Length: 208
Image (cartoon, rainbow, N blue to C red; front, side):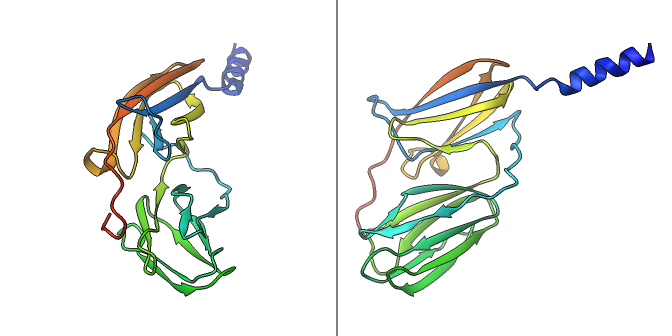
């Protein structure tokens, strides 16, 4: 009997945990897709583990703009800021999440910054007021930026109630963020449409 129980425990331990997939579609009230929204998931209301291996993250300065406009990185990430323009840039952020200044540096030079706290980090250039970008430092392994179709896809989410957070720099909501609960099935895919209202982008040179 004891041997049978041991076999059953081993079988259940080896079985993969039930998990489902989630497609989040962020659109305006008129149906226009919203790219550059950050979608983060918290299965059971808790953050999922971050990947052990860190990726390579970069916000480039090219054609007097930051690229990408929104970057998603995990807590503990290092971000490179290479300059591909023929002019010098002075990148900075006054965010309490990570305050820093990368003083004037020229083409084909780069600087690195470490991000060890979760939250939003707005970026600017002290020389070119039109340059604006955002880094979202996340504390959960389920995080993605919406694509040109306003979609973010997630796979192998533990089947349960999942807290979904949507952030966009121009979202009309407290903290530029919405929250909702979504039931993800043990198997299969569920699609969640999220209608949002956006503010117009700030005027060049204005505060953000």
